[in-house]
Image (tube, rainbow, N blue to C red; front, side, top):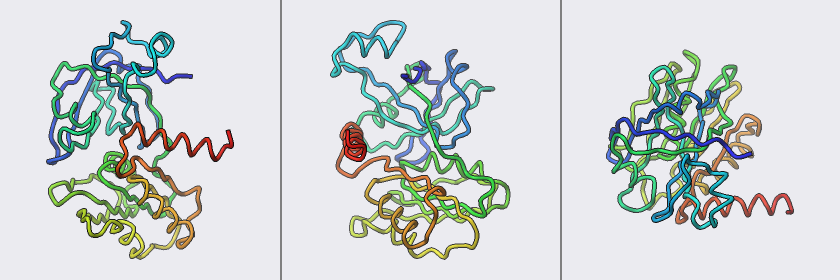
Length: 267
């Protein structure tokens, strides 16, 4: 079954850091956007192909049935940073690296009244309220989900966050009722594994840890292997996902993941 499509309008934008842009959107259709328990709640943002006319009202089922695949809207996956039904607002934070890519440049040029169409939501993770402590690891792409998760940790529960960003200007203040200890790493081409190295160097607290590890696929794989094989963290206490792969755009990365799933399933 296809996920429902929600059409919203941009209300305002804010540049949180030199490379992180917040887009706040709303509209009548937001009332039907479902609440979910997940802090990694994600949507597929739909970007129309230039020169293609789409049916009105916008209907992805009709588009898939009537148009060739190359004319379907491009999709990019983003975390819902916040959802406030009382205010009628949905917030998404975008990493912007200049004119390359699709979603980042869109967010940089977005103005009030611009259309934002999205499918979803999905999601699978929220901090376990019964965990003794929480471990959150990621880069800029995972920062919105980590920030949302920090807000959900019960008061006083320890949270260890290891975060890699471009430089000090990309660090953000993280609101957390838990006892947060955040380590910010600044990216260096000469140290591609510094995030993994920082996790290896951690002193693990006693008790049951609930871990969230998202970001660049190669680093995520290494951290997952370390947590499972060396720290003996049970797999069911891990939320692990490669949001992107270095040198590959999202279309290519999604194709790679689909091929991997097919290979595993034998289909």
